[in-house]
Length: 508
Image (cartoon, rainbow, N blue to C red):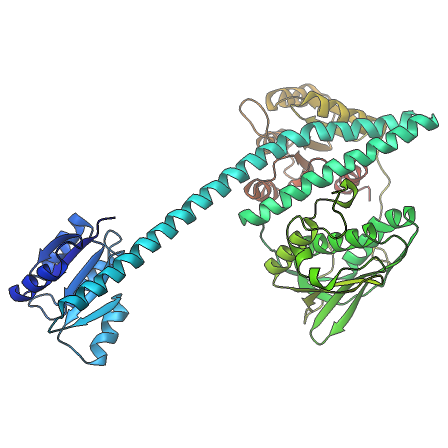
């Protein structure tokens, strides 16, 4: 890099001295007035401006203010060359954006040394900025690739899951059921690997945002107890979840993700005995602990377990023990939420992972809707004549979804694109009760646009709708939420999807 140096001084002798001192240090430009300095700075875009403080008409302070206020010249490093030695003048110059001072009478060796140092600093800053921009571009490209790969991988995986569940209901042969159970395990492993890789990618890309709210921790504890009860029973583990109804302040979705990862590890790495999920109040915080009686973690690895791909006692990289990304995700999410996470462990006796969250000073707002005394939503009897319109361009996914819904007792219409969906809705002599659409559709409309048109046709802006998609982009999710639609990411199990459908239709 050849530095551009602009020397501004109304004294010709000083300019001559500066020229001699800086000859060979870069391209030199000169100005004998403030107006000329601003004009040359616009034209030449200097890296460093050596600026006299005391000049007629426009002094150095005014020139500095003008250069820093203009985006075209704001990046220039400004060094005051001045006879002023009072602190007030230096503070004023620094407040205006100057970086350094050289006091008159000048010393040529000192001028050269100061300018060289500032040129080096500027070069290093530009290299760092370029490296950061390159890294951001690479990260954005990786995110785009993984988002595209996510969509393409989730489509066939979703169809496999639904066809497998439909087949499971038809098969009675014991050997065939055993094979289907093995298929189920393989599909679950594929889904977990895909979701984990995408989780870590989203965290690296900085697209995950915390949405803090006040809620009773009991909601998460009850849901996690239900989710892990079967897995623990299959492994002959004693899973205990100690209830607590204190209100906390956190992002419920991200906090549940953290606790799910911790509980999953505890169940996975405990060969026998007990796994406990419980809470301890510590002043104005709540410490949520996951305790297991597993093999424990060596002391020297207690921090390493939070590194990506690090696993204890899995040198063979057994697939059943995951990728070693779960705790890396836990730590990043905890940092995002500004919650502290810690671990203590003893070899042969087990481990305790804990996350500390703030308690809410106010009680949480009640959940919308009618609840029973136990806090469970009141059920309304299912209407088996509910009609669901499926808009999905992948024939395998469309067919599997239609088969699953028909077997669940719903009437279905299906279309491969928006235009076909609108035509079927117009010609059908039945009322639509729910729309399930992919986001990325061929031709002129995406899933949200199709839903908007269908709601206009039905003259019902509240017509329930689900966007079922492999698109994981944050912007897409936010747009779906703004349009009053339910976002469900592929792949989703039939049980989970049917639960969402029944909820939207008021059947639970």
